[in-house]
Image 1 (cartoon, one colour):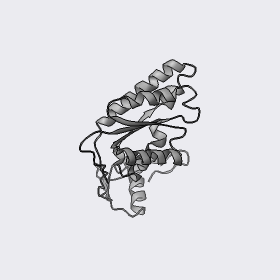
Image 2 (spheres, rainbow, N blue to C red):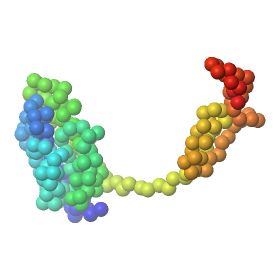
Image 3 (cartoon, helix red, strand yellow):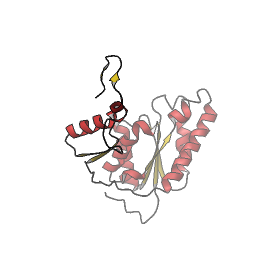
Image 4 (tube, rainbow, N blue to C red):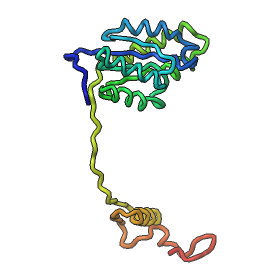
Length: 202
C-alpha cells in the first residue's frame, strides 16, 4: 500500500454528502462542510451531492492526491451500506483503507430529526467532529490470511452429531466424532419405537 509522504503530520479530508435530499433536506450540509474545515488537522472539506457515486468517489481520490491526505472522513449514510465502497475508494487512491472513518448523517441525524433544521445541523456537526477526532487516531491496518484446518471435530454421537458428521464427510472433509457413551445413537438408541410410525428407533 502506497503511503502519502507527510512526515508524520495528520492530514484529514472531510467529505460531506447531501445524499440527494436524504441528508440535505434536513441538514444544512453547507454549514457542516464549513464547520469541518475549521476542525483540527482538517486540510480540506468537500460537499458532494452523492459521494458514493463515481463522481463523488473521484473527488475523494483527487483530494487525497492533491492535498496529500492521510486520513479520510466520509459524512454520509450508514457504514453498513457503503463502508466497503469508501474503503475501496481510498485504497485505489493509494491510502490504507483503514485510514477512513465514517459519520452517519442519514440514519443518525437527518432521518430521525425531520423538521428540526437547526438542531439536526448541530448534531451533524457533532457527528463530523467525533469522526474527525477518531480519524486522527487511526493507524494503518493490514488484513492477514490465516490457514484453515479443514478437519472437523463433532462432539456427541446422537442423531444430530451423526448427521452433522455424515454431511461434513460427504463434503470431503475429515471428521472425528467423539461420544462419551460406549455406543452412538444418543437418546434415540434408548427408544424401542418412534411415533407416529412406531418403527424401530434404530
